[in-house]
Structure formats: structure tokens, C-alpha cells
Length: 135
Image (cartoon, rainbow, N blue to C red; front, side, top):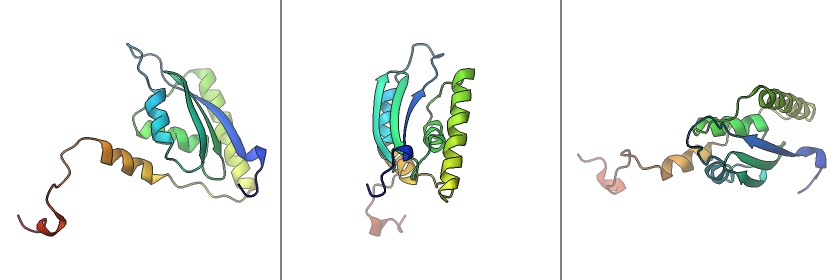
């Protein structure tokens, strides 16, 4: 990468909610969804409820990553300690980006598009494009 700086690469752990029984495997499907985000360098599922991610804050922040996960239906850990760490990371990354003159990022919409295309639903028209104007 040009302009490589260690302070721009962040390594974070994302914890998922463990109150559901039986314990679901959130980490693996979440890692598959996050691989498509711009700025994600490495992602690894440590166990069913824990994910490690490294990313470049010039492209994406922890807040944006967790927003995408919540939008996709993943339940993140909400304990007090995790919430405090999360708030601290959000603040420091936002401040660092503001000091570099980077505006708040726009969500990576292609994640939502790819997920929508993979999900089975009845919103697809099987007819060829030129037949769709006919009933």
C-alpha cells in the first residue's frame, strides 16, 4: 500500500451475543459477509462467537463494520465492558479520521446487494428482459 502507516491498521475483536440457546455460530457467516468490504485486510473466526478483524481506517471503521453486521441480522455482545471498549474504539477512530481530513465513510452497499442476490426470495422475474414489458 502506498503511504503505509501502522497507526492506520487496526486489529479488533468482535464478540457476538451468547444468550441464545443453542449457541449459534455467528462468526463464520459474519466473516464471509465482511470479506467483501473495502478496507478489510484479514478476518478470522476464532470460535463461534468471536471474530478478529484487521482493517485500514482510511476505508472503514469499527463502527461501520458493526453497523453492517447489525443490518445483516447478527447479534453483537452488549455487555458493559464490551460497550465501553466499543465506544472508546469508535471515538478514537473517528478522531483519527477527522485529523486526517477523512469524511465519515459511506456504507459499502455492495455487501447488501450481494447478500440480497444470494437469499432465496420471490422477487426475481425469471423472464428474459425483453419479455418483461408483457403481462
